[in-house]
Every structure is written in structure tokens, then in C-alpha cells.
Length: 334
Image (cartoon, rainbow, N blue to C red; front, side):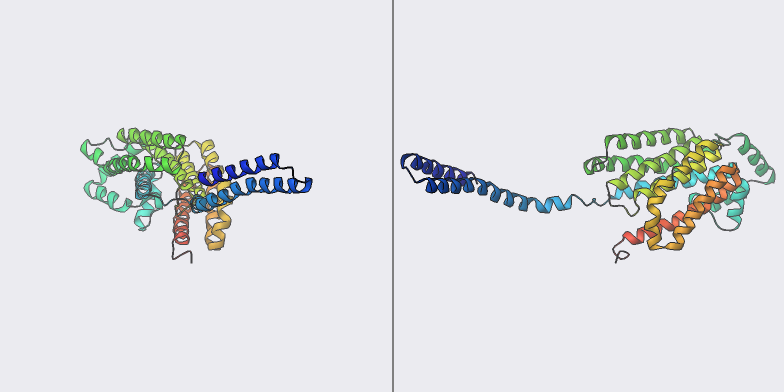
């Protein structure tokens, strides 16, 4: 392209010198100048078209989100596993009757899977007098649920500690890739800070603080949906985070904060509802009604109602997650 421009400039120089030497009629001189001007204008345009054509494939790809690395999926699994285990422990303290009913019926909520086997093992090892003693100690020791027996207490938090090790390792794998994909420094710092808070709380076996930090970490995970092609959209994580956070605050009897958390789900849910309604109208209505019921239960400040309505909402979200994953999969999108 440089050689073409130099060649054209030389021709123009010669042409202009000839126009100065030879006195052309007025019309011919004007016509010659116009031709020269057209040459000057058209050549850069032609070069620009070639350049833009070569850049087209690159610009068309920029609108598509990259596929999420395997570490991102592993992080979500470990975060939800920690929440499930901590939620189980919280229900044992706050609403033991509800947890026992779920266990006897062979059912448990999404956030309390695995409760039957672990609790059943404890029951077989402890007699009637010990079970009564543990029940009374759970009421008085809200932040120290597992300090009743040294190694036994540490073993009861082994699942959370293993999941935490996985989280730190996978975040170290994911962070540079997420930074390259466009995750902001503030989002990365927020995830790192919340993960550290969770680690410290679990290491000290502070139940309520650990559950709150785990839920906050889940809320941070939603930011990855902004940069990666993940089956669930950002709004899904925002609404489910609000539900879990509201339930956690209610269990601590912080009713005003619980109300703020559940109210904050209205905007993202209003954006997600039409999309869900197109895929499954009845499921969309079930989720919608369960969110309203949970909000009403929080307003009543009755923990038993919050636990029941919250469990229903979480089960609905489990079904919703499956539905959204199917719709984004190659087979479900056709």
C-alpha cells in the first residue's frame, strides 16, 4: 500500500507541474484537477475497505461470551456444598422440628441435602440422655455448635474445610482467566475478600457467620455470568442469592435486613420472569408465588414459616436451574 501511494504522489507531482507549464483552457484545467482530487480521495477509501474486511471476523466474535472454564463450575459446586452443610447445621439449631420432619419423611430442601445420613449416625451413637443434652446445648451455643467433643467437633466441619481448600485452589486457577475475560478488579477483590472471610469463619466454627459468608460468596459468583457463557443468567443468581440471604438474616432475627434482601429480588426477578414464562409457564408461576409467600413469612417474623416457605422457594429454584440449563444446552435449544 505504501508503494502505491508513493507512485500516485509522483504521478500527481508530474501532472501538477505540467498544468503549471502548459496553459490549458479553463475547462480542461478544471477537469484535470477534479480527476486528481478523485484519485486522492478514492485510493485511501479502497485501502480502508480492505482493512475493515480483514478485521470483520474478529469484531463479530467480540459479542459472544467465552465458555466458562471447568474451575468456574467446580467453584459453584463447592460453594453450594458448603451452604447446604451449614444450612443443615443451622436448621438443627433454629428449627429442629422442621429438620426432623424432613428427615423422617425422606425429604430435605436443596440447601440441606445429606442431612439424613449424618444426623442418623449421630443418633445411633448417642442415647436418650445425650440427645436431650445436645438439644439443650444447641439452643445455648448458637455460634459454637461443634465444640462438644474435640476431634468429633472438628470432624463435623471436615466437609466445609475440604470444600474451602478446593475453592482456594480453583479460584487461583480461574482468577487470571477471568481477568483476561473481563472480570473487573473490584469483582475479583470482592470474591477474594469474601472467600477469606468464609475461611476464617469456618476455621473458627462460627456457624451463623460462616453461613452468611458462604451466601455472600454465592452472590459474588453471579458476576462470572456477566463474562462467561453460563447456563443461568445473572438474574438467576441475584434472585437466589436474595432468597438465601433473607432466610439467613431471618434465622438471626434480623428481620429488617431480611426484608431488604427479599425486596431486592423484585427487579432481577421481573427481568427473569418473562424468560422463564416462555419456557414453562407453570414453573414461572410457582416460583413467583413462592417468592411472595416467603416475603409474607418474613413480614410475619415467624421463623417456622420462613423455614417452610424458604425451602419451597429453594426447591422451585432447583427446578428452575434445571430448566434453564436445558434451554441453554445444544439439545434443549433446538
